[in-house]
Amino acid sequence: MSKISHLEFGTHDAQQSRLFFEQLFGWTFAAFKGGQQATIDIHGTSGGLHDGVSQPNIRVYFQVSDIHAAVRQVRQLGGLSTEPAGEPGHGQFASCVDSQGLPFGLHQPGGHR
Image 1 (cartoon, helix red, strand yellow):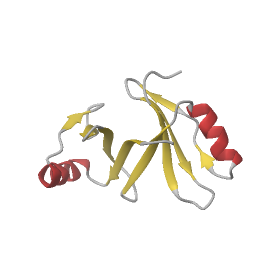
Image 2 (cartoon, helix red, strand yellow; image 1 turned 60 degrees about the horizontal axis):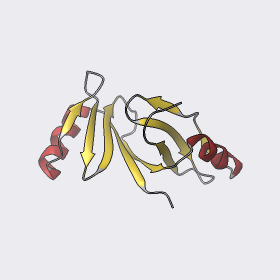
Image 3 (cartoon, one colour; image 1 turned 90 degrees about the vertical axis):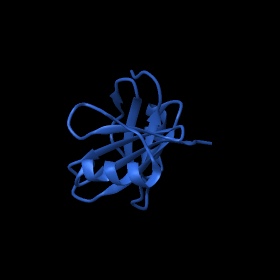
C-alpha cells in the first residue's frame, strides 16, 4: 500500500496562494530555488508551491520504494508517466496519468539515482 507522500500546488500567483494558505491553515512556507517557489510541511507530509501554470491544480504524489519499477508498471497498465527526475534533498518524482486520464504522481523519498 502506498501512502500520500507529497502534495504539489501549481498556481498563477504563488505569493497570493502562499498568503491564502498561511492565513487559512497556518502553514509555514520555506523559499525554494529563489523566486516564488516554496516547500511546505503539511502536518508531516511534504508539499511544494510553484506558479507559472496555465490551470491551477493540486497533484497528489504517492510514495513508492522503486520509482523506476512503478513507472514501468504505470505504462504496462495503460497509463502515462514522465521519466523520474531527482530533486536534491527531496528524492525522485514522476508525473503520471492513469488509463482514464486522472493525473497523479509517484515519489521515491531520499537520495536519487
